[in-house]
Amino acid sequence: MSNHPSTQTQQPESKQETPLLVTNQETHLDRSLQSLKLYLSSLGFDQSSVLRCGISWVVFFVIGVVIPVVILLFTANCLSCNQYQIKGFELVIVASHACLAAVALLCLSHNLRKYGIRKFLFVDQYNGHVERFSKEYIQMISSIRLFVLWVLPCLFLKITREFIRVTYMHQESWWKSFGILVALTFSWAYVNFIYLSSCLVFHLVCYLQIIHFDDYGRLLDTEPDVLVLIEEHARLRHDLSKISHRFRIYLLLVFSVVTSSQFAMLFQITEFGNKVTFINSGDFAVSSIAQVVGLILCLNAAAKISHRAQGVAALATRWHALASCGLDDTSNMRLPNVPISDVSSESDLEAMNYSSLPTSTQLASYLSSYHRRQAFVMYLQNNPGGITLYGWTVDRSLINTIFFIELSLVLFVLGRTTVFTYERLP
Image (cartoon, rainbow, N blue to C red; front, top):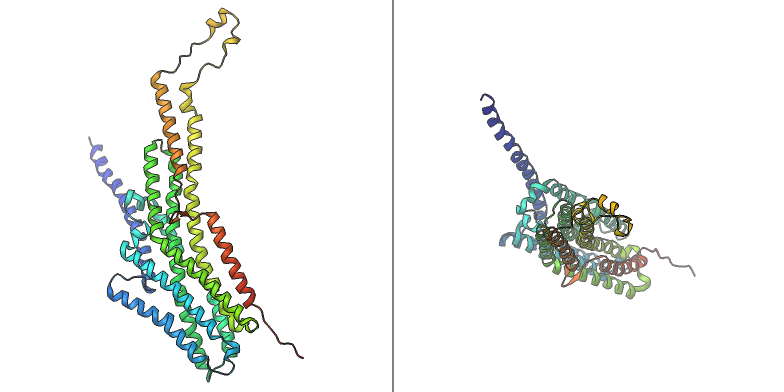
């Protein structure tokens, strides 16, 4: 009787430990989401009100369009400017980066305003996923800091190219030259941060779904109920269809703008011919690298989640084969291994142990389980899922085609702009 109250007091303490752990994980996740939202807001993606929307687009128009255009128009009037800076090249670069940043700002801000940061990333309370995957969510969201590793090489190339150009196109004073360098570099970095951040957000959304597909692969090993597996897979396919619907316009516009920008650079380089040098067209190389890096981030994430979704059918096929050939389902269906032809006498026949045939109930249960698993495998094979663009699945075959198209254009631009020409003496 004395021990009974102590057990009653211990039970509430054990029940309070797991909610405390869950709340701590949720607070860490809320902090990660808040920091991500603050970072996106600093770039102008938070357009939840008319005032924020107006400020975002005015800042983008001033920094991304007005400042570089004004500087290019008023600094290209010197005698040696045509040799070290071609106005047509620079305007094409400004237009391409401004279009990509505008597409990113328009599409991503619309989705964030409509769904919010949690629903947009599919980090919600549905089915207890926050409690199960909070650590994975936090690690994946924190990995967005690796974005600096993608930007720093392009930013270093841009600063190097601007320094080279300033040394050849020296203005009236070094302070004016330094101010032009800072203004052009800041404008270029601003629009590229917007574009690459949107690509990284799409990359993050896809990789958060990979966590769910990995968990679904583990669910196949532990869950015997086929209906539960079908419902969970239908939910995952529904999430992928939502992602495809939200990002299909964005992906098509990004691919169209990047490809058209590469062709515009190609035509500009072909038109000027022998006048092209690294000094006056080095921005083509830097811009091509930055644009293709963002496109590769998007296509790699889309192809990876599509490949993971299509690989579920292979896992289910193996699960069906192991369940059909395992001991649990076939032990009741086995007949004696000794054939009747090996029985030589009546005494041998009497010495054999009697093995009863499976009853109709056991046979019906085995066939019902087998047919349910077979129907589930056929369902997965006919509904692979993945990121789609108006019916076209973004898989490895499509990404290889797009990659080689963009790679051929980029290599042509790099081959024409990273050469240093010289004049021969007569």
